[in-house]
Length: 331
Image (cartoon, rainbow, N blue to C red; front, side, top):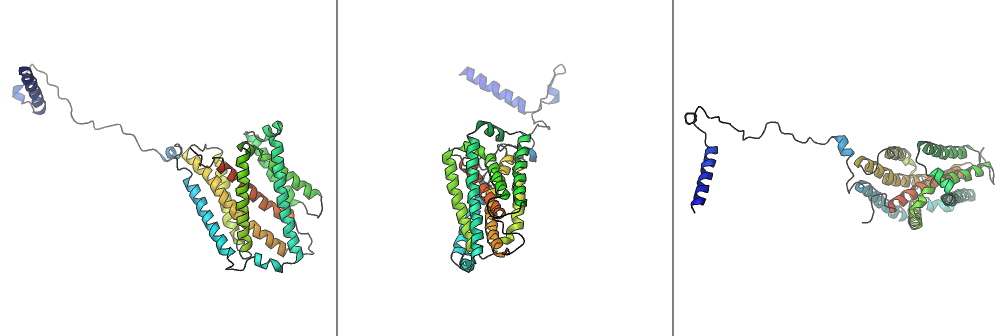
């Protein structure tokens, strides 16, 4: 009991001494008094706010692809609404006017879609052949700058050659150039076979559904309804192309890289869906308006290339989304 009283007394004395000022007359002259600062320092090292660049280069969050998914969902809802609206026959569409077409218009459209189907078959065959040939696969799967430049040059150059040649019915030079172009496109996309057969088969079925639905909207809508979309579609294509180039330098694990990759993936799917609407109606318009006895015959190959490229881009993006590249990996 005495020890506790002594401890409490000494503690009270120390606390009271520290809290009460010491009069100057009670301090002997031979004592040294040290006054310790009890307030915090005026200059405290605080962490500054992250800069804009640090935020952009920060690791991507779990919702990095939410904006792209939301835009795609909105575009799908608009497409379903357009299909219901134009399919109900509220406005007279191209399909209702088809019985008025002369036979040569029907033959032109049939030949164009025949070349579209042939392009897809040749591309698939070329992709499988290159994938099963290690030497060719090693050549197209390189990530060097020279390989990328040569690949783009071959794709663009072969397409320009095909479009620039004069079309003649039958099997000729333009048909050979068309086959070479589709073969090059198949060789370029051959590395997509690494995703596996089940994923590619699902992507093919989904692509068939998307293309069938958009084509139905295009033929049920009034003639020329989507031909005024060229300017906004070109602007969207420029944005997607710029995002695709920028994503080559920025990894998708960063916030900025994930945003650019989402724009290239989901935004590209929306843009090429719009191009499919435009190109489908352009085929019908071109088949109707091209003169029967003109200086140059109707060219179904040039008309088919646009829709073929739209379908190919839609398929590749759907395959990437299904493989988990669009931020939808199952946990």
